Image (cartoon, rainbow, N blue to C red; front, side, top):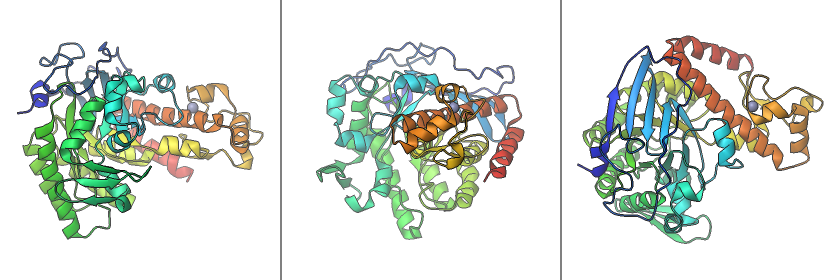
Length: 422
Ligand SMILES: [Zn+2]
């Protein structure tokens, strides 16, 4: 049994009397204590789930159909689920300060093992107090393992059972990422949630290739679990198998037997159709333990989040809010708004009239339109801020809907509004 498992506790509490408490309550007071890797050393006291900020605990508070409203407690504060995690690949959510992220009620951010190990280096980040201190974000952080880069940087790597060897996309230097090294990097970064190293094959991979990826993912998960030491960090396993449900089932069954504190579905949104992905989500979520958090990696569009939540997924991440924000494309409840379009040139209205974000409270569509045409850097910043706010507000609204047992109605209303505008 790993140290991480000993301190983990999870419970299912299905209760109606906690409904409507969707707002984030006081964040844990745990100070930033990440540091260079200290094998076996408890940076934060482990053990009882009730000791303040000291351990991890996942509670499902209410279910409505398959949708779950819950809370995930970490040493850096609680996360209400379902949650959306803004992506901070390079130790920054592009264009946004931690203060701005707090202002739109971001609870948890993502960092990336591959990118941070290459630049500036995990040892350097550890020597400066860990990732939380380095990027001045004192909330929870999840770090992806680099498994996705096996897919996205396919031309720059060699892979076998021992490790994946990348040729740096920055300067051509060699980065060897074994399961043990992926664990070490994430322990140096000091994230709250670390992901095991996995192999993420493309959607068009044939069955032999998928089987190979699942086999390797299982071997690597076991090695990651064995290598994991930090008590103030939990490790989530990743289920692969694309849209092949028999392979997903096999992968999930073996990972569940290893008893990880949380489980992710990887290998979605890698080229398959949205319909194929949506059809696979519910059976895949059903393969995972009910009392542990479920994370759908790298997905997606607002309608994908609704499909995931309906399937029983608790955590999501995607680069879309900031990527689209940089390209003058805003998410709204009435569908996407392209701010470069001439129709906004004299439009005094805010991007979204009932959005409480700084952008919508302060600026007109005409001003945002002007910023993009003048190629001013404030444009991408303001629309990224709004887009992250849109995603986080959507999640807050759907949490309330689940808590109040009106989730299906909420989902149908959202889909009808979005469909009417596309
Ligand atoms: Zn807004």
